[in-house]
Amino acid sequence: MRLAYIRGVALAAAVLATAACDKTLHTEPFDRVSAENAVTDLATAQAALNGAYGALESSGMYGLDIPLLGDLPSDNGRWAGTYQFLGNIVSNQIAADNTEVTNMWTGLYRQIDRDNVVLATVPKIASIPDATKSQLQGEAYFLRALSYSVLVKFWGAVPTPTTPVASASEAEQYTRTPVAQVYALILSDLDKAAQLIPASNTNTRRATRTAVTALRSRVLFYRAFAGTPSAPNATDLQGALDAANTVLAGRDTLTVPYASLFTATGDNTSEDIFRVSFIASQSNSLGYYWLFAGRHEAEPSANLNSAYEAGDLRKASTVINRPNSTTRLQGVKYPTTAGTEHPHVIRLAELVLIKAEVLARQNNLAAAVAEYDKVRVRAGLRPHVLGTDVKTQADVLAAITKERRIELALEGDRWPDLVRQGLAGTVKSLAKPGYALFPIPLRDITAAASGALVQNPDY
Image 1 (tube, rainbow, N blue to C red):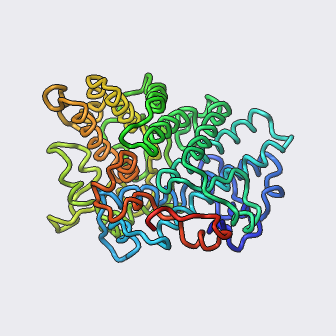
Image 2: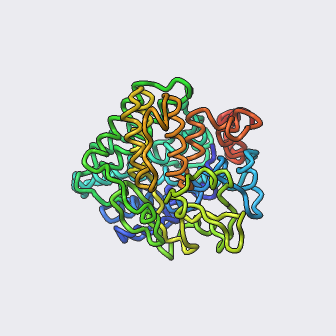
Image 3: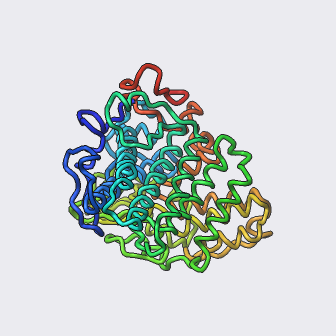
């Protein structure tokens, strides 16, 4: 398989040339040189990891596509602009050569290759202290797990290179790894990250042990439903609950007010677990796409707008009317077109809702309601009462699904959440069931060795 980013580059490590400088390390990115020659000491190893973090800022990742394409295909999104490829995503008629889907795929594999450079080179550098080696590798394992966790949610079975891509001919041989094995790799990477990242790492813009545990909870939660949406795996659900409880122990108070989570400059909050930093010179495009003051290609749907209960404080920080319009909407979770917001990759409220859903699926309904009521109360709403507002397990699960939709709206959660539960086809009336997953980019299939890379069903 010829991953799009490798075209025209002698060695895949050269993708580090486009790495953005990390705001913590302040280390210069690489030029177009091979991994073995470039990563030779502590400074260049830190620069390599810097490049891996920098890849998170690309438009294919948290600079645009992961949050945007996690909502646009769902009942949360509406096409408001002129880019037809976005309109096709909203209507769930995605061609295999869709520009934005291809961009997201490319961004994720570019990020993974940078992780692989760190993991392949750092252990060989004798001059780096062992503790520092561990930290560098641990952070790279976390980042690789994160990228693969996105790929498996949106595409299902995907190629899983674990070493730097040395040539186009090598990449052209890659085949798709079954979903179960993708999840096994992700969890293995998280195990290693948990062992290697020091407890002293507390910066929520970098990998921490808490971020590792939170991602483990999310990954186990999603794996529980893989292939069996109506009968999730009980062991994985319990694992997701255990990991969520570890994160929530001693810090289950949500940030108040909700609006403080989404400031123009990405101010720190007590709810942060892992976020991606942006500054004016290295900005994201989220507000530019959602706001009327920007390009306004994307718009919250009327369906989402009407889903908010009266008095829900989350609405004003998520969806408002466009200027001089009573019917057209704009998304304001990324409140400026400057692109200096720091998108949440994972935050405390998601863990609260994972815990609530697992408890509900274990038929511990009172505890489940008490858990999801935390996000309702923070939003200024009356807490639900079991036996009055919700009476059955189905009622509680439906309430949690709605709270996930409202709480995490425009953060890229809604479409994967519908797919996880087997609801995508019902909510969006998909023409074909395979459209729940994104297509493998056509140019990668075309460039791959004959039969190596197989398209998703129905495309």
